Each structure stands twice: as structure tokens, then as C-alpha cells.
Length: 405
Image (cartoon, rainbow, N blue to C red; front, side):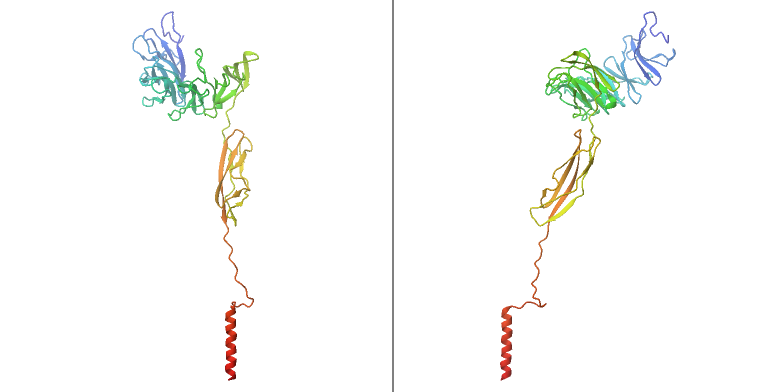
């Protein structure tokens, strides 16, 4: 025995055991202080009560120990108080009290996310960085005193997926990056106020995380098909149905999800066999890599036609992880381009419908009009008009008459 915390034969089983920096933190009852925060370094002398959270024999009832990446250990006291501890009495600090209670702590990086309700809001999404000032409401999803009940926290990439309720959409998947603007509905799976995700009073609502794949799986219905397996990668366009195991309006009601190597085990119902175990390939996140596309250089061409001219240009080039993407041109090569500058946009679309774009310019200008050449007399002299020639002959005739006299 390490230590007789509760003297006598009745004994007491410590709960919420959590290892932090080589020490075990837990909740225990010693018969004097009630259920309180304890710590052990593995020795009898080093197994001690850290702090009497609630003075007297009633106990502060510490629970839900959760460690963030920076080593801060958070826990809930008395079902409504957020605490943190560094293993010392002075370093065990109450950060905030929530009159409507709190639950479901989840660490993502150095941030703690949780559900809590204060005097102005129902049970909503909160966060804490381990300071009183940094413990704050993220978003009032169900505005006013109503509760959105955020729960089923699951990491997808660098964000947190969860399930929440609002009157316009019902119970649906959400995601947060820890900011008000970055906390958004992923998809109204069942459009309108009805629930796309069903709440189970026995097991609650669950998101099954495939964190290394950046995915969370869940059961949902869109109203056209029954309760089937869905997934999200933390984006609206990546929140899609995985498989319709019971085609049509029937529900396969997938549950008991477990990972077995590169397979997904689950229990599901179909029309042929009833409710039986199924083994499916692990879903993969939708490829979100945008194709790389390079446009030809800008092109200039002249024409004598004020309506423009046909212009042919070299093709764009593109590459993508999914293979050669499809290229579409806003104005195809060989089209009639008007006089002036036309922007041509090239769109590259891959097999996953990711799209990349580039733009180049085709300029058509009018040729200047050709100037008329001067008349050529063949003698290298300027042309002389008919009246000038007649006058010249008249003068010569007068000169001859004058010499005869």
C-alpha cells in the first residue's frame, strides 16, 4: 500500500488519475476534507492533498482533469468552477465560476475548450489559456439564455469540430478555431430546425476522430436518406456522407465505431441482414490541393478589320497531384477577338474539383491606313497642265513674228 488516505477498513478508490511531469494527480476522500485534489510522486511522504478546494468536510469534488500542451492541468471543481494547478497549494487557482455549471473539457494545443453557462448565457462554448482574463466565451451560438450545448469535441487539423444546437438549424456539426468569427456551422445536414444529428440519451452524440487524417465521423440524416455515416474535415464542402449502408429512406444507424488498422469497424443495419458488424475502408479527406496553372505570355496582333480578328495562342500548362487537370479557357484560341485588350482566364480543374486560375491578355490593334503614292511622269519633272502648254506656244509664235519685222 502506498498510503492509507482514508483510514480504516472501508477505504476509498481514488478517481480521475492523471500523470503530469512524473506525478499523479487524482481526486480522493480522506474522511476529513471531503473529496479533494491529491497528488503523489510514488512515495508515502509525497502522497499529499494539494489543496482543500472547499473548506470543510463537504469537498470540492475535483474531476475531468485535462492537460494542455504547455503543461497546464485544468479540472472542474464542484461541477461549476474551472481550476488549474501546478501541484502546489499556491499554484492551484480558481479561474472562473459558472452559475449554470460546466462540463466536457477538451485540450487543443495550449487552449482548453469547454461547455459552460454564466449569468447571461446558457451552456455555450468557452475557452481558457490558464488565466482569468483569458477565460472567455467564444460564441453565443444560441443567443440569449438558451443553450447550444456544445459537445463531442474532436480535433480536425488545427481546429475543433463539435456538435451544437441553435433554433434555426437544430443539432448539427460545427467547427471553431477559438475565435468568434471562426466558429461556424459546418453544414445544416437536415435543412431547417430539425436535427441532422440525433441525440442519444444513453450514449450522447459522438464524433469519432481520425485525427491523423484530419477527419471526424458521425451519424446523421439529410431527410432524403436515413441515419447514415458522415464525415467532416472541418470545412463545409468537406462535410459529406461517407456511405449509404441502408439505401433509400431506411437508416443503417451506424454506431460502435472503432479503427482496426486501415479499416473502420462499426455496427450498422441493412435490409438484408439486419443489424450486424461491418468493416469498411477508412475514409480519406478530400484532396484540397489546388492545381498549378501557367498561362502563355500576353499577345498582340494587328488587323485591318475594325471588327477584330481571329487569334490563336499557345496552350496553358498545368499540373496536379490528382493527374493532369482539365483546362478551360474563357475565350478559346482561334476565336474572334475584338479590337482592344481581352483578358483570357484559364481554369484548371482536377478530379477532386479543386480549381486553379491564371489570366493573360490578347491585344488587337488596327493597322494604320496606307498612304497614296505620287503620280510618275517618266521625265523626272513635275507635270504641266494643258493651259500652261498653250500659253507657251503662243509666246513662241509672237517671238517669231517680232523677228520677221
